[in-house]
Length: 169
Image (cartoon, rainbow, N blue to C red):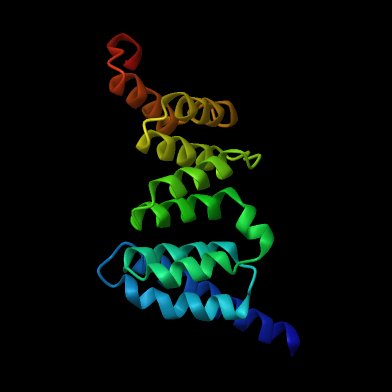
């Protein structure tokens, strides 16, 4: 009956997601795009699928389509740190550094609580040589996840960039 049909649909969805994950960051990334569109059509509020589709579109040079996708997402999604960081990547790809910085600042002001997002914010500030804001993000990352080599690496990168050799170790 109904439970069997739901189980089949969930299995198909999981298989599509697994295939998308296998295609990302490969020469066959373009094949993930129609699968992601199907997944989004099935579940409109799936932020992972929307962000992954945007990431694919940016990597494939479909910048206008990526911007439309991100800017037409739900207002809640648009305020999320992850979408702001994706918009920053898009703006940087488009050559708009000021807009990229604005999106990173919005992501940072978002009340983030996950160490991986703090790491992304830190790396973004590193790109713009905004050392203090990058360091603050990496420290917040370490506060939420003390055993966090990416954040420690980020802090070391800041010290190296500032030629603070003793602190980099």
